[in-house]
Length: 495
Ligand code: ADP
Ligand code: ZN
Ligand code: MG
Image (cartoon, rainbow, N blue to C red):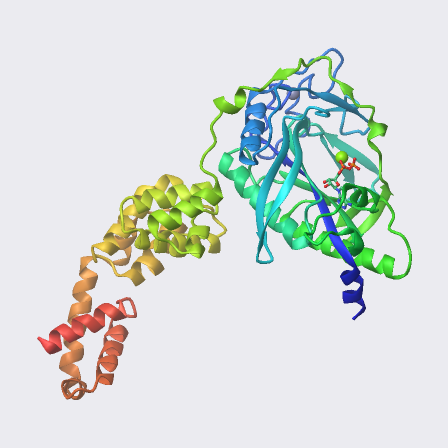
């Protein structure tokens, strides 16, 4: 088919520029808070520095530098002896100084990498650089879109939020790989405690795409720098999620294939991802670096960071932790993956696993707890402070004071819905010891009331026991554990 013919001759090449907001208490060059208040008024979290007032000077936030160094260590980047800041000059209403404070030729992280797994293949994606910069303010077009707005509002509360811009090599060969990379990156950043994926706009992606002629791709998949530079590429802006990246890039690959199939050239341009319509639209021809007139920020001295790398520790990262969970707790790949999906989940599991058999702990955290939380759109962080309550719940099951079924379907659910501790739920629902007495009397009643089934069982008819289990289940309103009932019946009948 024609689509296949077109892709057969060309290789998809993608490189990403990812902006992530760093979790610090205050902004990168002033003391204003980075935490948006509930229903905060516009332009209230500001000061002369982040408003760009004359004479206000920047002071670099140590916390932002520490976060950047953590990221550098996690991606195996080189951290230079000295890092410097530059002004990137352009006019836009969200940028009151008329320049963005960023880094240019001495970024804090250089030449790193990150491994990703996609399409059943593990690949190493080169990270060219990662640098610190300030977020601009945000603008809001009154009337919805820029085309029909009567005026535009600007809010500087976001201005000066620390950002890390992470630039990859053009190492991706499919939209799926970029999605896997973003998921992996987010996971690592969350482990480092420098990023909050739930915050609106905390991740923004620009994706560069080109189709490189197959002749320029060596047998081992490498492409020369000349061929990469020569390939006309589109830069797709306004991507804000992993899924959005995959969709925008899939659309863009098809669009470029169609342009080439008609014998036309790909324009070197900036395109906008319109998520609602699922298309990319041309915005402008691509600006060049020289347009920004970069120069050193004279108000910030060069920062010596050589020894920060040794001074700042990072936690065990997701891949290593997954591997250790498999070895130390004997978990399979899937369980180990689930239980390391965030650092908070992994920490929670290890606390529980310290008290119980690892299999039991894994089932409770990976299947029961995460499943119920997910259903309620809750996070493990919502119940972190209740570790003791969940431990007691599992203890009650392990001690057979509560059936597995009741624990999972009644107690756990009400603990999450009502915020109650397990004892309160058990008492309210009458599930404690009284419950097992109830099961025992139902077992006795079933034996007494069904002499035929009892006789059949004693004659070796195994099917008869299922009938009796059914009677007990009915009598207890389905709250008993069928396995337990089966055992109790056999005890009575065989004894
Ligand atoms: P520019 O100076 O135009 O911003 P850079 O060299 O800084 O270009 O690269 C910007 C981004 O474009 C990087 O993420 C890089 O991986 C990506 N990129 C470079 N060449 C290509 C290409 N041929 N196809 C797709 N992406 C590319
Ligand atoms: Zn400020
Ligand atoms: Mg660039």
